[in-house]
Image (tube, rainbow, N blue to C red):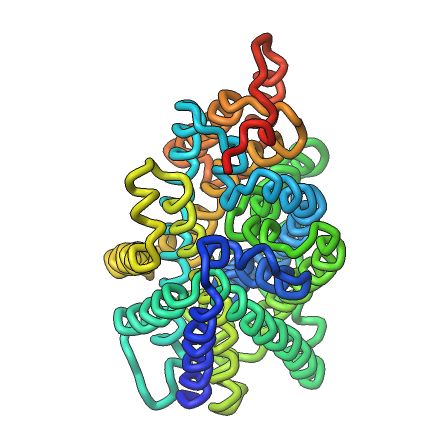
Length: 496
């Protein structure tokens, strides 16, 4: 197991070293010179969107509430398709026309007036803050994986050491080659993840059926509520029939589909769209990317449904269900492959978060800091600093607290990024005369509403993404139509 894992880490570091030779300019470091083919763009975007929560958070949620958690997977498939369909080709074309390298640059049309600079700074800060939170989720997943039921074979390590090992590798190869290294490693890691989530579900279903327990997949109780069967699509929608049950189901779907809606506006995904070689490649890239999302998400759900019938005792931490199942049924070398797949999910996202954050600092922060950050060595120093900050925070929280689970931390970062950027991006893609004031108002409204949603405890009942995006869309529409002088078209205001 240890040898398999070490080989995986060495390959990732070698890719980072080779990619260093390819990053000759700022455009290369941030967007690979806009020369990504559809295959690389699709797999990289998919891998970076499906982080450690795919192997830990989603199976753990299915174990807790049953098949109703599969609506998260369905939402991800629909959200991924909508993101490719609505934004990819237009964002590639318009960002290239503006010479915009980041989403904050794009939503301000690369303008240089005070309002545009303020908007870019706030958007950049949102990216740095929420990317760091999301990065913490990946480091928690790293710690749980390497110190969990599988560990590293005969070499037991504690949670803190596991986090430090994962963080060190991520920081090292991201700082070496920038976006090129991230994409190359993402492609390899996405293939590992896909193979694991094709093979594991098939094997699990085969075992369950061969044991004659196929029907029990749907009738076994969920972890949270023994009265709810694992096969219930609607969870526990409440007693009675009619309007109340329909409302309960509607609220549940708004909650579960929120993750899928969050695909819109994610800068780590948008950077792959902007880096495409040609906007005409978006169609084939969409087919590859959405297919990958469907295979992996539904595969993770299938494993979680079968695993309780295949293991001797359920783990205390539901997010470790896949690791426990692997330990009991797979030989050491194959367990190493599963660990490599889970670490691939973690690293393919974590490196992208670091790159998105440092790219925003380079492009969207105030002049002196922006100028300094464009030095290759300062860029690498910022990556290291952000990685160290995320590692420190990860080590300071209790991973056994449910609020610090992989899924909860990932959802917090995911929601913040989408709420800050999704509606502004769609607004700027949909009109030739976007108004910076409308962009800023929409962004502030969304972030403010998200904070209130958290403080009032509403997030414990309904994930905040869809309610916030709906309110932002309405305000954006009304504000744009409010009497006033529209801004100049972005292409006329772009700087060289």
